[in-house]
Amino acid sequence: MGLVATIAVALAYGLHRGASVLAQPLTVLPAQSGWFPQEHALSRFHVRWYVASIVFLAFDVEMLFMYPWAVVVAEKGISAVVEMFLFLGALLIAVAWAWREGAFRWA
Image 1 (cartoon, rainbow, N blue to C red):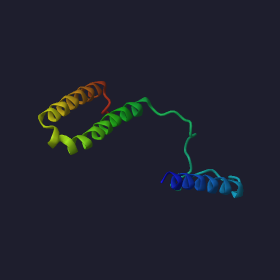
Image 2: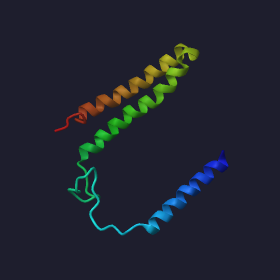
Image 3: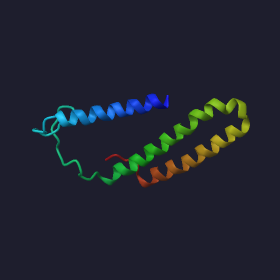
Image 4: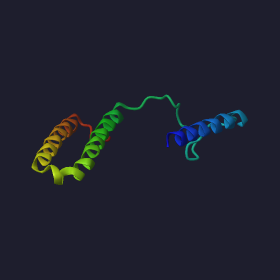
């Protein structure tokens, strides 16, 4: 399996290198979904989007821990339920703080 994976990676790398040698130089501006770029790719985002991304990551990590917990909760018993409610309590504190700071106001 390791040999197959190594060959697949080497093949993909070789195809990429071969295609970049044969490719024509870029003659027009790149467009995303058919739209021309409105601003520079390195432009800054408003600070509220950073807070929104942190809140998203908090919920994303919550789900990351809840999926395996749902699989083993039956065999672990009440201690797993208590641990999950402690985790959700900590997450609720973080969400309450974000709410107080105005992270959920979009305008």
